[in-house]
Image 1: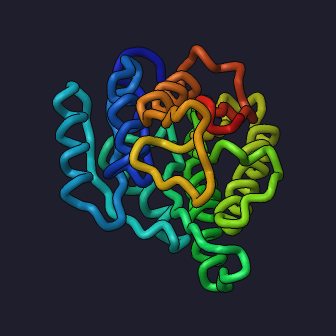
Image 2 (image 1 turned 120 degrees about the horizontal axis):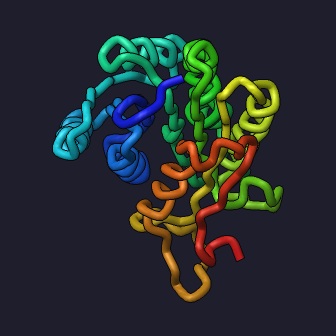
Length: 244
């Protein structure tokens, strides 16, 4: 088990901008975290900027390109992070595309893309990360959901996305139960609409409250810390009034 200051390495997928960026920067502030791997698919310059900001905080960082729609890239990104930074103790599966379209117009190709991006990428990254975490007796996995993932309510404009996130929650709890006692915890953090996000047509937010990525990043920082060692299989909703 890695203990002490600067001993743990985090990998945050989809961390060149938005929520992933906020999570990567927040984890770099944790005393136990010694480095953060920044993953990107298309925005290299933005990813490099995130890595520079992490180094400015006195932590190590590396930028890794991977197309997480492809299974082989999921194993590759874990191997690359381990080679460059010494391992992956904290995995945050933030990568996941959103498709907003009427359910009756959704194509098979679109469904498959959203499923691969939101569910299969996280599954394969977890599968690649787990052996080393278990061998070390410590690991943290956080999957990013969405605020209504447990409600099973109709949301016709994001059907493929909602279905993929529901599968991700099931995987989260399945893995948490299977790995209980190994030192590895698996949890979900589910944001509502965040600043800069797109509000579905006809939807309103009570009192106009829009979430801040920093609030979600704070929840992630807590759930991966030793302060949350007894928490696994949980879904933490950070949505303000958006889910009410």
